[in-house]
View 1 (cartoon, rainbow, N blue to C red):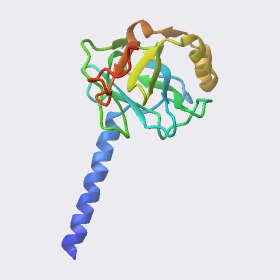
View 2 (view 1 turned 60 degrees about the horizontal axis):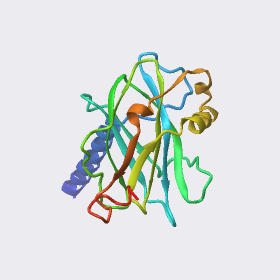
View 3 (view 1 turned 90 degrees about the vertical axis):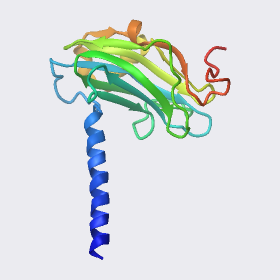
Length: 199
């Protein structure tokens, strides 16, 4: 009996430690309820997935180069829904991050097996302390199995200012010349990993 109790406690202890370690590696969203740290940057944008009957759980991972403990995981599931369409799920986001170079490292759907296919060159963008930067609108759907990041700053930044009033008084830099990328397929795409990214 004692062995069973110790085994159960050890299992729960390992799970708790794993969750704590994982949470320590992921940057939390910034809600704008306090003044931003002048030693950090603020990045903003949107993540959206299109679907026919049910969402598939779009996840996009961004990492700071050379800093394994600074990662951002953007997800459509289990977050607020800022999209007016019944066939879109997603939200406007805002993160406070250390200055440095950031890279989109991969993406996938939570309810599919595939992961982002390798690309010939990475999408890397640089943020500097004190800046507020729009990094684009991330969009994917489960028909094409392609993720794109496009510049829709004019409309999206206004919506972000409505959601996060702290942005009203800040100068916002459009960083999509560095952060935007062409459609990026996953290995779930049917035509040898290309999907319908290019019609």
